[in-house]
Length: 196
Image 1 (tube, rainbow, N blue to C red):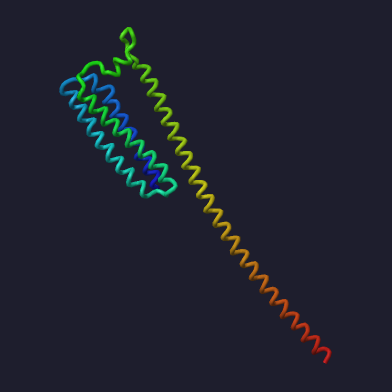
Image 2: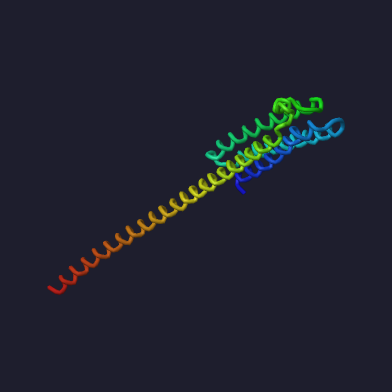
């Protein structure tokens, strides 16, 4: 498996663990109190440590990628680091907040007090769909890049074959010209002998 493929594998792991941390921060912790809340907070902290390890693995895999790919992957890695820092801040706020409606829920509450969970879920679903589409596009782009590199290699091999064939043809031509000159000399010699 190439460095970029491993990087993508780590990215998938990071996305899953980030989603799990986000669920705990936005849904589970606000609805809990006491020991349950503390246990969920500790679980989220452990997942953040796992996410940090995944980030470190991604940094190591960047060293095994080609320079052209590395620049693009570095930008994605910066985005993941930024997301992780935000999750850390959000967890800190969520764990220190008194249980009850969150500020966000109060802001999003309608005039009749109903929350917008369904709208949030729709928005989340659209965001996940967009992320998957982006990941698919990225994979297709990488496949195209790989095919282009393979085509370039094949083209270089074909050119090398043509060069070798040209040298062989030139060598054969020179050999034929040399044989021609020997035949001419032999004919002249024979004619001379016939005259004598």
